[in-house]
Length: 144
Ligand SMILES: [Zn+2]
Image (cartoon, rainbow, N blue to C red; front, side):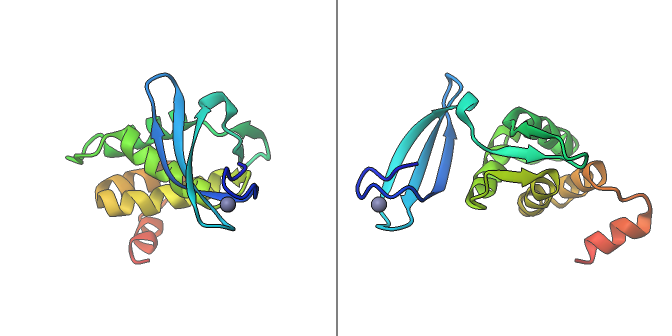
């Protein structure tokens, strides 16, 4: 995204907000001059591509993330909505500055964010999205 102040193409996303008409308002910070500017993007223009375990590529979809977060926080009393949490995860994913990410990247970042939100939600997400099978796997994860 081109900086409107110095024309440099490298910027990082410092905040993402979902607007009602399926567009996203992003605050960006130029990596050269450090100035901040705002861009409005539609969800369709979202450039991030996800590579899954079968090496299939698909566009990153926030809806999928929201669904999995909803499931994870279902039995908790978390005050944040799934949309808010998913948006936080997405912001962190964009901060990785990679156009291609893997499902593993998403799981890792989601676990970091959910861990701060609620331990139970984090654990539910972990059991749903990793290949942990035994109680030992869960215990290893918890001791990290
Ligand atoms: Zn700049």
